[in-house]
View 1 (cartoon, rainbow, N blue to C red):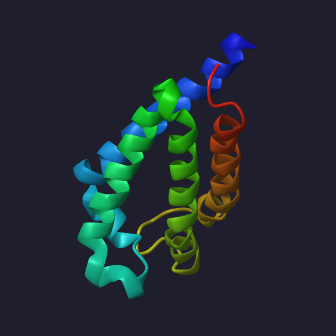
View 2 (view 1 turned 180 degrees about the vertical axis):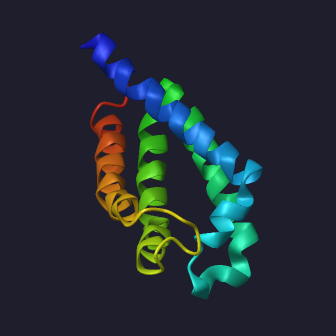
Length: 125
């Protein structure tokens, strides 16, 4: 059980740290997937989401903050869900992304929420 716990924890933490870093390295991508009604705020949204992902990933690695980090990641995944819907409804927001990948993003979002929720239920091992 110990190994399984960390097999689930470490990749998730690294995923969010990497994703957060990408908000700064490839900000143009995140600007494109920002829904039109939020476009005037795309820069600040990108920074906030990037920082939140990095802090969430780091927080998962620290036992005393793991549960709070998992709740934060869940909230973040819900908050960015409109970007995934926008990508699907706009057929990739001007990028050449296959439709099947755009459709797959929606259930993957739910799986990511469930994955994070595991650490709400099991914050410290």
